Image 1 (cartoon, rainbow, N blue to C red):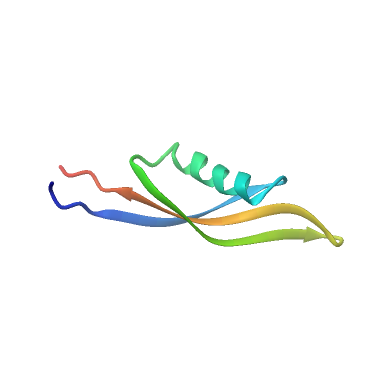
Image 2 (image 1 turned 180 degrees about the horizontal axis):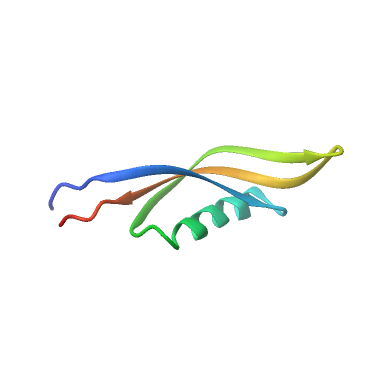
Length: 70
């Protein structure tokens, strides 16, 4: 097996429903422009609050993808 090199980026997904949906949205959106996604790691979960009510869930996700060997 040849040596591999991976890049790690961080994206933030949002959802009005849940942290799981927020993380899923981050991966789904990133996968539209990145190839060979390998690992998704949740780094931080938070919520947006307006007038004392939670209006959005946010998930900060680290994604790794493999560099192509040309």
